[in-house]
Length: 191
Image 1 (cartoon, helix red, strand yellow):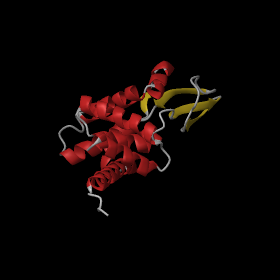
Image 2 (cartoon, helix red, strand yellow; image 1 turned 180 degrees about the vertical axis):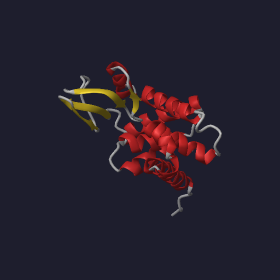
Image 3 (cartoon, helix red, strand yellow; image 1 turned 90 degrees about the horizontal axis):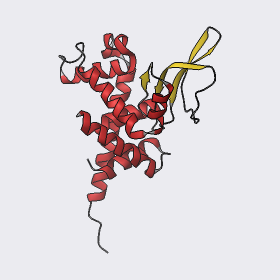
Image 4 (cartoon, one colour; image 1 turned 45 degrees about the vertical axis):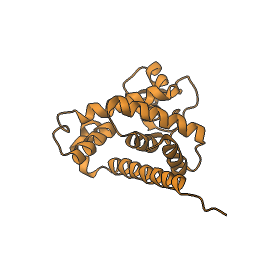
């Protein structure tokens, strides 16, 4: 699939993402996918579900006293949010966990790095003993469940909505990209 078709697919999927920003995400996803032998469309599907292609996305615990709540969304600053603490899930693919704030910031400011870390984490789950010996389809579902919910997710991988959302988004990206490629290849009628 061409990079231009994937960019068109991402723009069509989001309705608001400028083509230059979509290009940054597609190119980063392609490099990470090549490095970890994963489909680019899968990484883009995860990024859409996790962050809507906004690398500033941050999931964190925000605490007042002993009362802590998970907060998600875009955090536009380089400083950590007040009253926030790990676990951090950062960047376009929302990877991290119990990482230092500096590591989280790197995932949020370096799109290539964010995709590489996400692809690496997904590969770890693909190779996890609970997933690796399953059929290809179940192995992917298991790995996505682990990526999203750890071992609790893996235990319920066939029924997680997250897994279905990622796979549906991946499939929509493929369809949009295929449509884009067919549209470009059609000969224009001569007048």
